[in-house]
Image (cartoon, rainbow, N blue to C red):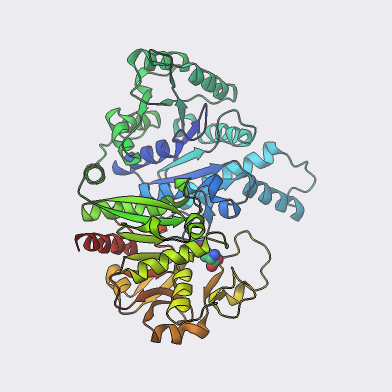
Length: 535
Ligand code: GLN
């Protein structure tokens, strides 16, 4: 196999500068040039994975095909690079330390003093190399989470340096993303924070080859030259990353500044012209107008929009396919519940109740499901939204007033949603849910029409399910389970007869969406919302 090339993306000054977008945009351009590209995300926290983290702090927990619960950036990589990644592509401090400590206990290092250097660093380097190799990549983009200078990221910085040493300077390059703030009454771009972070990086033995300067506007020529001068790189290796209309525009901004050529030259690769026709067309479609539909997302962490990022992205893609704009109305489920009124929903063309956990806000979500059902407004329920739609139906159509999920009312008499049998007795919270890809068999109905096939694999993340004891009764009253698991026992999709679009799934269709392939169930929702609006 030929030598794999590595692009390490670091961040300076502060977090949230778009290292992920820098990484995925560079990766996409190289992919459009014909290279096989993969990505690794490094998260320097002690959690083994993102599964136990609060979405309010970290945004959505993304689920991969193999069931790994990971940082939402991995979702961006899958969507940009149109690939399915695995657990190995998210390296965390927790994962690395766990592995090294387990090895130590097993006796793999017998006789040695086990230390950050060399043992932890070795594990990181090997992890990156294995992920790249298993993906059969020509180029592996490695995003190093955190900011240069953080104590947490030190072992990873050292690993990046070592990777360069082992693989050779021609095969490993560094892109540093930094902030160029505009301050003062004259709106001057300031380079000092960048200077400091580049120095910090150099102090760790890493020389950036490309600097991406994030700023509200394009970098002034003299500012870009100044950055190039003190970082000791050519002027053309300083890239302007001004605020874009959408993250999907960034690859095009990079292309204009010849980022692929810079990378190819630095890594000794043949210069190939990226074919971005399809991408450009997609960007045109999402930035151009069209009819607008408004979809309410009833969530719990809606003030941090990234909590539902995969839903947002797939709605955007659905809009692009259907030639319309999808506006999202964010509704806090606990507020809906407290107000005791569905007024906040008035005027929306469709409703999504996404995945969720716990009692807080669950009654608000049930109210939204009921409002959409009785008002003939298109509804998509995902996971918790699937379970709660069933609860609402049982309460208000079957007349089981105390119907609930045993997650929310453990002692309740009518647990129409109950714990998965294999989950009983599970005590550990990390990576123990029913996770990842499982086969779903679809029978006649809207979901099967939208997927265009009767067997699909979709990603899961749940501990509870529809209680089989109630299925007959529910179906007789008009709510049909048109998707089931391979064994037929587990309910996966529900549809309401006689409603323009009332569809919900136990799985999370949003995790598999791609710019040119929105999740079929979201596409169906937006289509129905458009029809609903036109009346
Ligand atoms: N809390 C529910 C369960 O565990 C739903 C989970 C989800 O929405 N991801 O089954």
